[in-house]
Length: 453
Image (cartoon, rainbow, N blue to C red; front, side, top):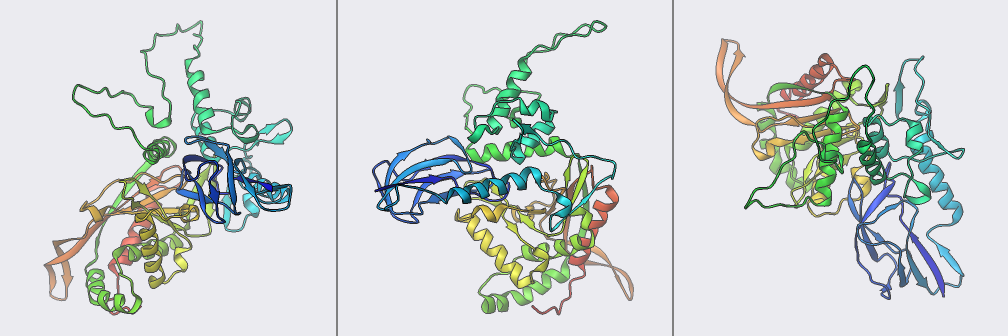
């Protein structure tokens, strides 16, 4: 008999930890190769972890609700193999994974990284990297984002004890530290007496940092947020705290586009076995506009701008639970309209049936949301960090509109829709944001009625 150590595998780019949401096997249960053992959730997606070997579950090293790190042993499996001890990958492979993870998060030189262009002042130096006992200390993107927002210096960050694997700092460690730091009294300056501040409840997460605390009244129902809703709440609050949001709106006459789709949708479904919705058409227009205005396809890192080479468009999708998730269409500008349609339909189906994998929600550079699907005319979306912009389209409605004809201006019934875009005013000014949004509308308005796909 041999012992196999099952570790938490890499769950995708920039994912350093996961939360145990449930065990599918009990101690003593027999396990077949590729059979799921445990359910975990990251800030990206929920997934199962299968066993790479046949055997019997001898020990569970974590419980439901625990936060575990990538590479941490989560279970012990007894197998029929001859080796005295087995691990999920050789030590050399695990060391290589760890090195890759640290490199990708902390030590990567963006100027030499394929697909990323760094725009920065030559006199601006990158912030010092954090060290622990002479080695670089790993911090997840979420932890670094919270630290930056709370004005925690790298030196102060290094002093915070971590409870994660190998002493890593988790977001809960940081929240606990912020609670204690917020409770420390602030000494008053001799020149200016300290004023008594009103008592406030100490927030336990970013989403709870509000000016007012709601109190339940008699007869009210209190519903605890589920894990995903808490993640969404924190993410939205962090986004508003991080980016100064500016919003632009444009109106688009999409009459030709609507007529074209009505003419081809039956033949398209018969030929391709897929329904063609407006979503892939909108994504195609956005992809073209991002090629025209590459400085919208960016992210912010301190005082540096990361200009993305790849155009990876996330599309907000509603889950059966009522929560939202954003699967990503990779290299959307390189796909044909048929390819976009198939990809959009596949990701939407996976989202509805909870079959999205971690890679399906990674690497987005721009987000699109179709609020028109709910009958909304327009709306103001919140930026999906660390991206710099998000575009929303409203419902398409028939309206009387003034059109130019050979005989002069006339009033006609047209298919009209509104597009809105929220963007990070730190790096995207009104001229750039407005011009980009208008270009998307132009691509939709100038649709060819005889286009073949």
